[in-house]
Amino acid sequence: MTERYFVETPIAGDCALLVGPEAHHLTHVMRAGPGAEVVLFDGSGAEFPARVERIGRAEVELAVLSREPVDRELPLELTVGVALPKGDRQRWLVEKATELGVTRLVPLLTAQSVARPEQKPLARLRRTVIEASKQCGRNRLMEIAQPRDWSDFVTDSVEAPHRLLAHPCSDAQDTLSLIGCHAHACVGMTRLFRRFRSCPHKRGHGTQLAVGPEGGFTDDEVSQAIDAGWQVIDLGPRTLRVETAAILLAGMVVRQVV
Image 1 (cartoon, helix red, strand yellow):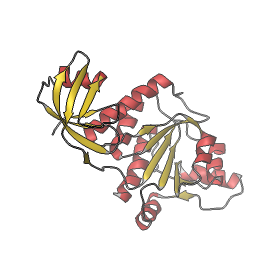
Image 2 (tube, one colour):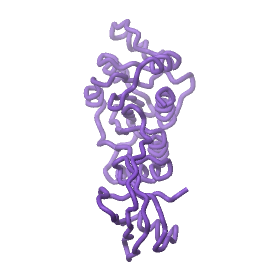
Image 3 (tube, helix red, strand yellow):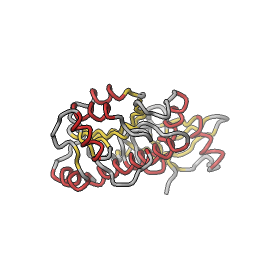
Image 4 (cartoon, helix red, strand yellow):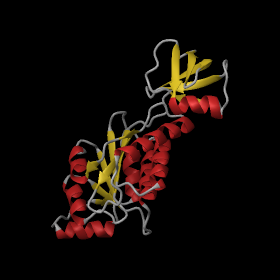
């Protein structure tokens, strides 16, 4: 398999420049020299077969041989809002979400969040997106959005045709009873599969998923989502870690549309 490298600036014309970690990896890890052929991508959705022309101290100049539109994205926009776990578990979550084809990952700020996203760690997660995209063949980068308060995330998503919140259904039904609502807000996995199979999916139509922190969503947060038209999905009787629940839910949706 030809090595893939990410170019930070849009590729135009017949030459491209690798800098930073990508140039270091090509020259010092892969020990490539002039004449080596690689594949470049710039996040635009295309691949660019290229040949190494010159190696400098901190940059690599390449000749672009062609532009090939290669679409490996999902047929719908998939946004995952998640209260990030701590430490290296964030990196694993971002890596796997990228591989699955998630369009956008939104760090959520909830009442029981354990990790407060800072700009420096988010920058490292964006680098993880690049590395995962190089490995899995995506030519568009998954977006790591700015952190959002839960109430804002719920409000902003009202146009999405599918909005699913991971939460134990027994707890959700208790919340429904407390707020005097008898709507069928909780959907099981079988019903979810049936719904996605019967619904046509078009690029640009969004599906929004939400996964809470280790302590879960509060009753107020669940009721706020239900009032806004979200549906609750129960992921089973076992307690899952945040990253496991997020990838399971995203994978369930991806399985129905590809």
